[in-house]
Image 1 (cartoon, rainbow, N blue to C red):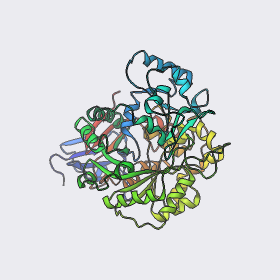
Image 2 (image 1 turned 90 degrees about the vertical axis):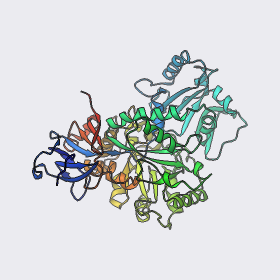
Image 3 (image 1 turned 180 degrees about the horizontal axis):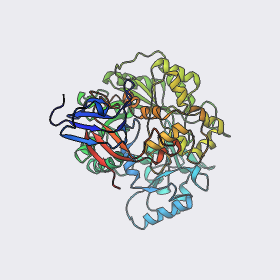
Image 4 (image 1 turned 180 degrees about the vertical axis):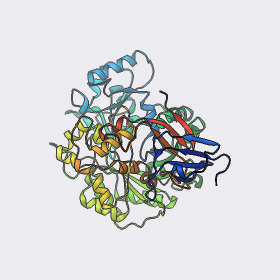
Length: 532
């Protein structure tokens, strides 16, 4: 029975992501939750608060199950190393010199190069960057987040020279004389990153808050941070402050194991999933990236003898698992290469799940699982969180590093689903070579077409349908992130939903990335409206 104050949304084309009631045209919302959903003609009267959806396609709010909001927000403030601004190292140096004349006493930061898109076909090194500045430190982060290039001044400030050993889980690239080239891979990059000046909690919180409207414009109503820290700034406090400053999205944090291992018991208030900000897991890195040739692979990268980098041990995985179990949160493990994925499955082949409301262990990316690994993951109840935008945006690097056939076999989403693996989609933004990496409709297009941005076939036998792509960003993402009462439009769920300008279920799949969000609602309240 309707009450005063109820909000009635009708005349919509609602895809609910609820398998028991996939379609509807009307909803009734009370105190932020859906109390009824069905067909418009079933409603009596219009109610006092009536909203006409004008026949538009409506979806549940998007859940980005793996991203890096602070890095994404900061990347927007750095020098872009991507097309259409930069196509070569020479053009990158030009952009750095522009900032060099504007700044006199700060680090110069650049974001997002992919050597596959640079004319030179290689990463910038210290000798390149020294041409832009020798007195100011320069840090250029590769699009994958796993590699940085720095100039001689940055190496000096970090104390890196020919005698510096490679850190565990990292590599310092060196020339024929043993001198560092300025390219630092995986854990080696922290030798520089840890000496860079830190932004304050207030400044970082403001940066995240300013990102919130951009994410709402893409229909993203719940976010994750897969690089959560406890020090020098506790990300839990950071996101609380960001919420005070205007952050709207629900947030799940995943602390890095290196931080959690120092004090393994988390306060109960941090892990309360009913709160809009909470800690959902502890994260471990097993390897690096495909595009940076640091993923731990079984067969070497294409036309090379490079097998990537192993970044952890079985002992560390079990220690992290024990901490996760103790805190009733997930163990989240980064793994791209075949060897890394098999290493995880070998380690936890006989583990006992400790969570009842979702997977206890999830593998992030799962780029190159073998058929046998997929079967083992399904049997063990280990989930995969993957990113269809990688093949779409980074096709040059994938072809160069894996070759054509191995590229087509990567990210086999259809095979994962057929085997019964719980899968969620996400962006990993900003860690991909795309100007707008968080856009979920680019990811959906990539998944349903299995075609890269340049038209390259990335494995058509692994295509999925549009409805499935939506559910992997909504219902399935909720099952993996375990955020309560989101991911579906159903009775008892929060009224988090989005209204699209075009019908995602009817548009040509090649045009899915052209879809725009017209409105975004959180708890039935309008939090974003597109300006025409």
